[in-house]
Length: 242
Length: 388
Image (tube, rainbow over all chains, first blue to last red; front, side, top):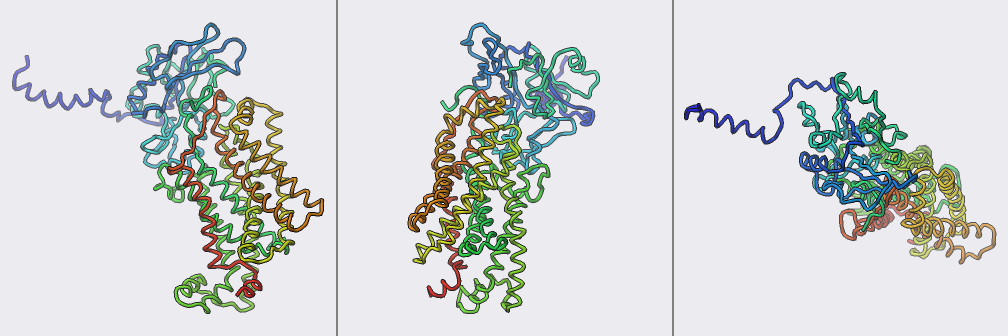
């Protein structure tokens, strides 16, 4: 039974704790050692239903400005053998999902897109001041306090994953929810995906299910001919996807 | 609707505006004007001597403006000094500051100072008031104009020019490399890009000095040295042929190879870039000047007609090279990296990266040049004294 005296003690404690309940994150992860992780992601084309939950979650989590995207979903339609000319759309990055398709028959599927956190990332290579950087745990980040806004990295990204923030005037992209994954959480997009089409993968963790998945399934990365060392793996990626 | 087909959602907005068109155009004029100047100094092409000093001052005027479009374009211009303080060694762009400073300080300013030092010293002694102070400052404390000292100036100037030629190639080849090394963009990604940039720079620099020489002669009521302009026109033709050959090699290679990007690039050349690439750059800006300059080499053309032809060819060349920069910079951003769609570039009239600013940046070098020729008259000595 809570007495009046206990309530006086509990209320300020609850008020303090509420801040973290609202933030949805634990305070810190003091045991996180960056050299013990190597982050990537698995995107399962077969599971994606194009609902746009990931886009909405990413937008809310990272305050992504309207009209710009750290992640988005594309819808592909291939009528027959025309692999080189698929019909693709992504209305508002699929933040509100997709309207019914105007095509009938053929092959139809959704492709979530995001920064590939490449090992040999062209964006990092071209940044004139090193504001785009590789973290020791394999994430490509932008230091917004250092970026000049020259946009060379945006030009160099083969996947169209970067944009210039309209008010900060610095380059912006998916951070793989670095503020979350270093605290033991998964990314906002993975957490919100209702079908498990997105799975955060720690390639250095031998117990991560990604290893078993990579050994037993057909996976591909986007634009492999560019040899960027992409770490976002797609399961059952169609050859028409660019 | 600005988009045809499909573009990645972040691609719809163009990142590099008309200011990034102005940047390679202006640096090209610098490199080209300097290389023309070096013809006289290093290769002893005495016919072009009347343009030597004018070419140097032209190079300086454009060089002073070259970083402005970049500075205006940056999202956070207040951080631009970071490129000097903490350059990222793997970035081609990080080298801009150093290449620029080297070219400005070690080549252009030094060569101009050595070339004009005698006049500066004499003017510091003969002028009065503020002018005297200005010229005294420009002597940098070195007022020895004995024959021996001038001989040393000449020798050092020759060495500076010798270093300046590869530096000019470096300056503009580097600009080409910035584009040519972007493997994500097939319109840019080409090892030929730096070479094409160097030769197109030479073409534009030679053309601008040719035009400036003829215009300034007319304004000063001095006869145009036809031997000089005929020689410059010859060099313009030779450089043009190499430049056009390289560009056609690149184009034919793309057409014949027809890789995955070809459909997109082919579509653009037939639609969005038809006017700027086919009409302005290739037809009017290249083929017409080459044919005209070539015809002058073959047929006997009267002096007056030649002057007119050179003026028209010079103007068309400048327009063509500007169109070439436009087609590289803007053209390379009009198609999606998915090769499935196209966007449109709408340039504002009044904005930080708008038409007015771009036009201002193109006019500014001529204003700087006007001041420079007042301070350091580049005209031949005999002519300057006869004008007095």
